Length: 121
Image (cartoon, rainbow, N blue to C red; front, top):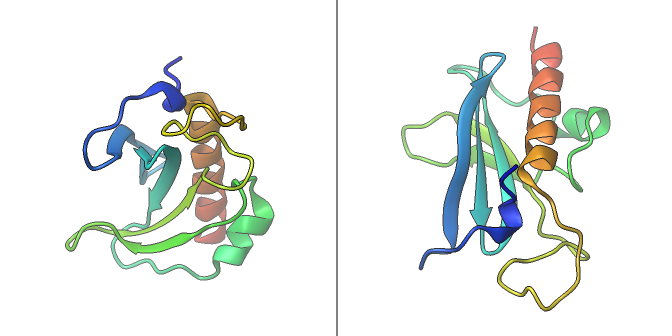
């Protein structure tokens, strides 16, 4: 299993780790400024009803913290990060914190997608 917290950073401190589709929704997992982040897309024409619904129904780390388009012509996406107090930051490995690996983050992504699909049927 490839761990997110050992991935080297480029000058922009942004690295795409994994992209894919699950149950009809596109997702991306990235490393940004030393922390893992996850994004899930909405199909064309769908709009977010209530991110609080997702926060209550799935185990997303802290809360949904992003809503928008990551690319000008891209889909609307929601996202969250693992960069909170007590979380490990790869840019500061001397500080102790909880480390999240690709398995942890992708599990959260799949839970969010399943909750979205249930909410938007």
